[in-house]
Image (cartoon, rainbow, N blue to C red; front, side, top):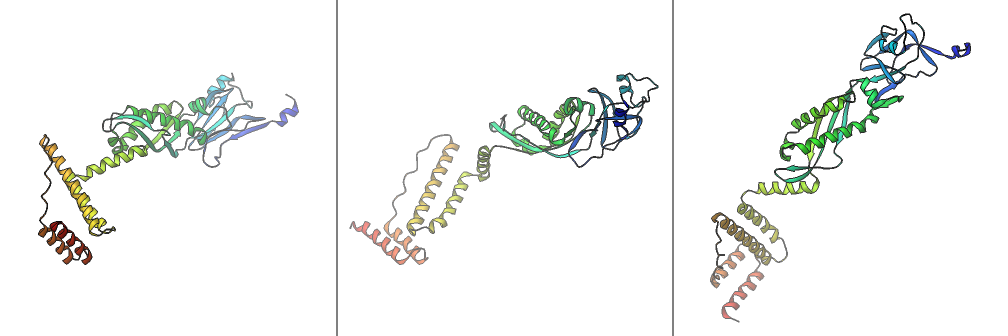
Length: 338
């Protein structure tokens, strides 16, 4: 090496990483045209780790603290470069810093519904969503398996791979679970713990430690949710006969507001009473376990009874004088045959 080349070289006596903002997990110290002074200081801050890499092989790993770089503190690098104990020259090595801070608020969700067998609803398709947090725990594994020799590696770079691992584990957990959907939805904490336990060894393979995992919701697709809502509504209706009477009573004032006056009321009453009779008879038949004949039609009301009812409606203000006169004339016509 000539004198000019020697002058061009820069000798580093302090190595450190001042993290600029969030989102960077791994950062390579710029070493172009530079060598590290023997006895240089390495500063590793809390929530950081540093790794020396020699020709692509991970050598020495440093945790938080102030470290003096020599053959004693760099035993693996000393071995790889065949230094002797008297080595005191500047040296070349790649140095990577890693952030070990917690990465909070990472979202996950199943992009496609997961089909599972459910004892209550048969085959159903479930979606799940939630949050998780993690931190880098083993920089050697992370460098070897994930980040490699890139100058920087960010949270966003890692996000897709981790999310795929989460979704795959969640889908497997849902598919193998014997718990019915209603129990899953009511015990999200138990489901969260189960998925976290299943994902811990998967994350460890890449040097990442999962800190927290939460299943925030497990839901059915919209069409299945509507069917479940209908089933719940039917259960809340209780006794069907009582439910039918309530529906009929609710329809009367609505029918009275429609055009047709008494005719509208009569039509609504007739429909309601008919439905009530049909439902009541069906329930009686089911309870008795045998088929019974339909009830005979009620005998025709006597004309004087019908006229009395009409007069009561008129006196109560429920029909007009015109309605009363028309109905009265129709009753008289039926009596006289005119």
